[in-house]
Image (cartoon, rainbow, N blue to C red):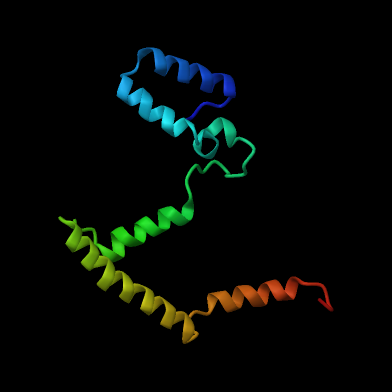
Length: 122
């Protein structure tokens, strides 16, 4: 996954195939069919500023852990669905209403600041 060049990647794949357990090697080979999406050697030209994760995904998981589950464990699927249906829906309802009632000044301030930077007539 962290191979910087294609040669390093091929060497790591060869090392895995010769010494790894057969079931694991077969599983990794299935993942390697989509290696362009997640192997670093194929993503070197993408501007990610040193971050190898998706910030949107990380924030979503943090919201689910902190706000929806309140840092508690859902011990079964029913409890997890109940948390998501009741708490997560209420969280989004509050967020939408907060924005709809124009209680958040920051987006408007940012928009006004960007508009002042535009040349006249645009």
